[in-house]
Length: 165
Picture (cartoon, rainbow, N blue to C red):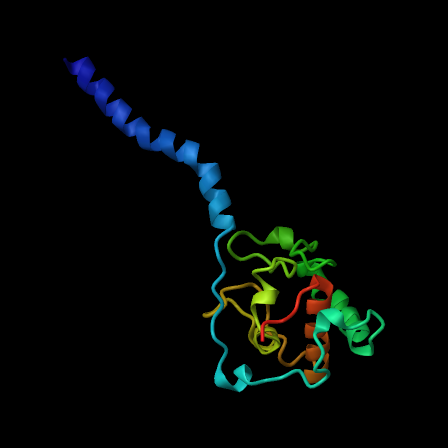
């Protein structure tokens, strides 16, 4: 009788552990693929328009001066975390752990889901605080507005996606 009780307790103690171990890898994969919900930019950012062009960045030629300048700036300052292809796999990315990982700009739910004004806000503000909770620093005072817009054009061009209108 005592052995039966002990066996029952062991079974009920082991059951959650067993279920966790079975579901663990799948749950981690689901967590990694969770839907990204973007915050709404403050009013001062929401109405911003890229003054460098009215064209869709993905349609600009590779030799466009703003694309070339944006690429050079991106490669010098952003690629270490976001990767040369913009896939979030730069050499510094390995030092971060989920959920604070560099954004994969090639993910269709990432940059294509936001406006250029939103990206400007992200570049300006960055940070671990709400609403972003990322390791990206604020670049507000490190680039001119023109340079930030050039980087933004390059991000969309490189990812091959159009910005959200």
